[in-house]
Length: 313
Image (cartoon, rainbow, N blue to C red; front, side, top):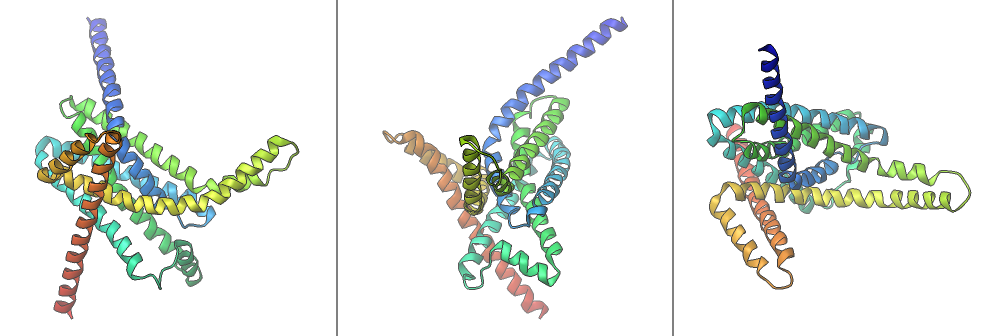
């Protein structure tokens, strides 16, 4: 009897693990788009540090991301079980935050051109002023805040896939996705920020022959490409804020989501470019919605801030 019970238990465990594997695979595909945005945003957030501080900063943000998910996974399960209607409003608040953060960055660039400094110059100024550590901590906190919103979207998307499964399957799938996504994103971010160091190492290798010449040439190409890649990631990261934030808002506001979907279907019917436009049109519309939402939130926050100053002043 004990042997039969053990076999039944093992069979149940095998079934759960099989369900988890299937669900994790589906969830990974579903969240792949968010993973790309997450990568662009976080790579952009952790640039501008001294070479010896790059990996420690990435590690600090990665640990913060794991803490975010350690909060989000049980919170999502509890909210889903007892107050499921609250998930979308919370997600939309996160989307509005991303849009606001992105628009605030763009607005600052447009209105402070004469005062603009690069991240590296700002860091150097703070270093001489004795405030580099505080600047670094602020950057890390900002990256972790941004990660919280993106992590929430990943968790909610995954939860939607496993919503009808047993609790153990839900918990295990969410935990796997949380760890895999964090490792994937910050592993790639670490590789990106150290690209110039790898290139420098390769370019300084000594040796004769075409093989060594090729290695040195590749190293020089990496050193040359690294600053351009970082600038590109800054632009892509800001654009990703609008696309992700706008996408969340569109998903939450049914009429807007339906309109964007209708435009995508109409674009897909265009002969010759339908497949490309069916992807491009909703992406651009989500980004446009994100820009508008970010502008509205910035105006509201600025207005409230001025009213507060008048009242307290």
